[in-house]
Length: 213
Image 1: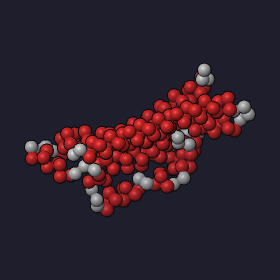
Image 2: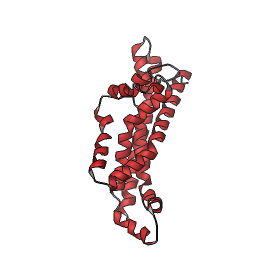
Image 3: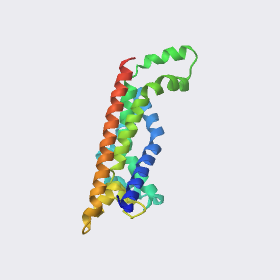
Image 4: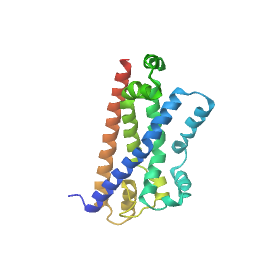
């Protein structure tokens, strides 16, 4: 039977990753759509700014977040850290799905008097939904494995901010830590592999759906 401490770490990690995706999902869809349809200098700059969390060391991202005092050493610091580092993967995956939709299809809805919201709701959203889910799953996997930014801004507080990567790190540092290490490694591996497989399935579904247009 898995130790209660291990179970709580797993549940906390799932909650942090899910909340990180939830926080970033709506702005991620909006930015992905705008970047796909707008190609002026402003949106190009926004796109490159979104790459920063991918290329900067996570501890630097954590230091930036550390300037927000309300995030210091609490679970919301872990959520925001996970959201920031996973956000580029979320937006870029969704943006790829939007890129595959022919903008000329909007004309059919606009002829019937449809505005921007009906166009998005009845055209883009149904077609891009698998891409949105694929981006969310990929972001979830990245958020689940977040370590550097989290330990800087949220700390590694047992029972409060300790997530799977932090618990694995702690287990490696203490004598007889393998008692907790192996269940944590198995859980982390299974969750990550499952997320990657779901992402692959959703990407194929996106390509199939958009390929039938």
